[in-house]
Length: 427
Image 1 (tube, rainbow, N blue to C red):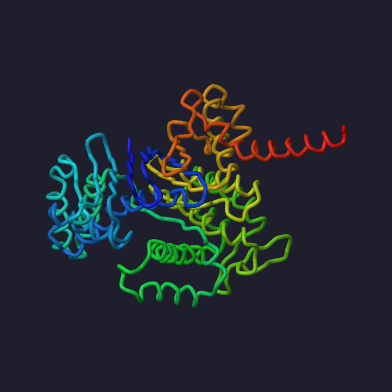
Image 2 (cartoon, rainbow, N blue to C red):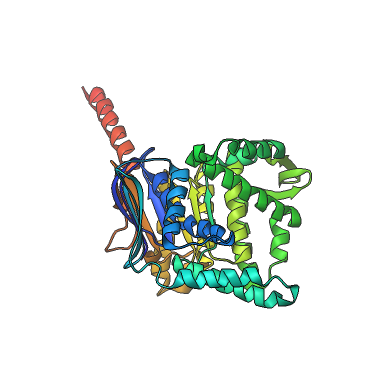
């Protein structure tokens, strides 16, 4: 099982996190949710950095790979002292990033590389030397083998790694020209002076542009469903679209004139829509596209509940779960402040547990595509620099007392005030 162990990094003093297909992080502001999500995301992007360097023809021996990781870490997080982070890919396969007096150190476990780098170099060189159009099938085969060996090296099945930032409404509240200007301004500075959030926002904006271009081709969700390859895919996309409509309360459309949401014959441009619609649309589009293209994905989604009514929060979490369940090798990390998020996930866990013996009855309540077997879920509460699992070992569900904790505090205050009123009235 994949894990990450963090010591003395940002607000995290000590935490060990199991990285299951769905990982949920909840806690107060500044408790370390985003820190953990960003660290896991960074480790997932090392593969892409490695592929980029290899494509440049560089001699990627083990020492050079260490330098790649070190420089990338410094560019992403900046200089930090006295920390230790261990990412465990498999039992004896890990990558440690830590700091000592001499600076940042990178340590791969002894069995990390084996013979993969040599295989990858041979495949890379074969691809570079075969440029003839008559060798297209051979090139595709070589490229597939190259990707396979790289994925094997980094113990992953995912080639599509994305971080969906909070504050997503910035991508719809402004014009294309502003987005272009903003992306350009982020990289006017030297790359190592960008903050982590700036780098993530730039990458997110780039992905949003790609997604919008895809939707321009089709115009709306319905036309994408019509173009699906088979009935199984159409069925999943139809379910996804039903959930999307619960969030948007209308029909989304995009054209050269811009993005709109229509309802009962009227429409509004997306940049004039509600903050909830603006904040949610990029999550909805990305989840739908992940199902449509049917590839293994890794996603971090920050605060998917932002600006949404509880019913819309429910539909958003269910849509993300549908995208997660689309492929066995997918990963989803959610950071949240919302107990509603935990409640929805608990229902999906409970549906999988009860549905095992009563499938037909449970399917009538929650579609099977949304069920979440507890073995696929990890959930933690962050506070005081530590992370505590909130999965009940016996029940396999998120602990109900945590979900009810805020309500309990509120009710307790109400009861105390009520007692004062009662005592005053009876005296």
